[in-house]
Length: 292
Length: 339
Image 1 (cartoon, rainbow over the protein chains, first blue to last red):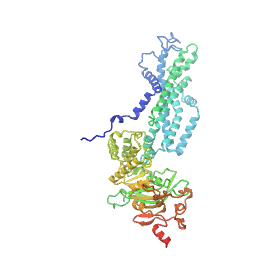
Image 2 (image 1 turned 90 degrees about the vertical axis):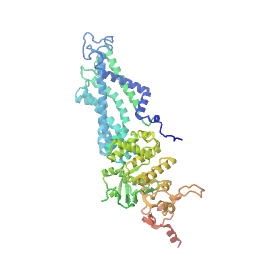
Image 3 (image 1 turned 90 degrees about the horizontal axis):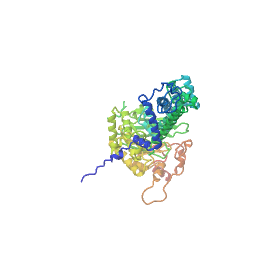
Image 4 (image 1 turned 60 degrees about the vertical axis):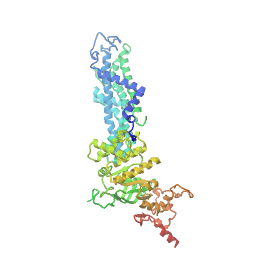
């Protein structure tokens, strides 16, 4: 008589957090839609140099303000540049501005929020007061002021937007840390002799990261609008390089004669912002490990 | 100089000897733990018993150097562990001891594990922190520990997240972590309170088995007398921050001498025919701002008299059996009263 082996069924062991988060994201229709939109724009932005499209800065005085046609699918602008090409190259500027400025905000904001929430006391006071002061200023006004101070260029616009979005991440991270640091497992980490740095980086950061990631995704959308706004005001991408905001800036002068000049960049901003918002909402649901 | 636990020391030299430990919360008028002394020897299990709020858990935290700063502080006392006074050690030195030579098991297994960390990595972490091993070796140790705490299919479980485990399983993981570095002293703070009764028994048996295997000294903090009867070698009964009685488990259960211990023992329901109502101790534990100067149990004590206005010392009653009561031993007090 052979003994029955008690090996566990390997199938039940394979469900893991990452794959489950991904599954939940895929099952969420609107999040998937958002992901597809974002992926589409990222795709064309990355592929811009190899796509068979016209030069985005080449002017053609024979085709000024032409409506969409077979030659120029999305029409041409006031000096005869192909709008499709400018849209695709402009996607690079817009997405880059969105992602880079949020990276700046996260890379500065999250560490300050961690320090502030973890240590408390005067560290917290100092960081929180500065954060409050920055939060008291409206986001776009602060970004405009910083961009004007740094000088008009896409890089400076990204820095200005990043710094303006940073206090949200300080505040968010600090609040999350305050709730996580009272958890028993943080005390447990101290009870096994770990250093402050190890506790912050391995016990606190991973447990505050999901809301930060969601906020980052949503802030990308805000940052894209902010970049468009700054470019619209002439503080962002400089001519002749295209960005959606600067295209809108020019298009406003020709709203009656050539409305398509405004349609496409407006629609693109709308779609990308929608995409990032849907994706952010979906991530929020998918990344909660306690919710199955 | 005995800095490490010496091999040639007499077998019954205490692993930890706490003398006159007093702790106070910030702004409180009296000590939450007052003049507490106890010792625990290698392989021995000391149960610290008392009701909620009597200072059991803060005592444990103070020994680990984990008292929340600015909230509670040590007023007096020494806690000699391996020749060093835990209460006087700098944080850095304490951090090197914690999880290595002294380990702790917490009350709440559901919240004591990092939810975003695989359990194998959490166990490996404590090994990596204190031992010069590679990641692979630490992981092998983690698996070995999971097997020792009898988690089925341990190699598959290493990559589980805490939320994939039940409460009992998580407490086993906590025990695996606590014992991963073969500590000399294990402090368990109500390790079974959050678990249901059948799992409680399994966990207690497991702790007992592992302790026998490893020879670790164990301080078990509990308010469950059933756990005490099962696992303790010695018992220290605490009331309102003071030790009221201390002795071998048999002496405490069969011949309790302090009126509080007597009340505690008679308030435990037993299986079998009932004889009258279950005994209770009248009154409440005094609030910290209303502590009597003398015996802290006097306001609730049926025997209390004028001399209880002076705090009674722990009087030697038998082989290592002591009680802090002016009337102990009770036999002589009764004889005195009768005569």
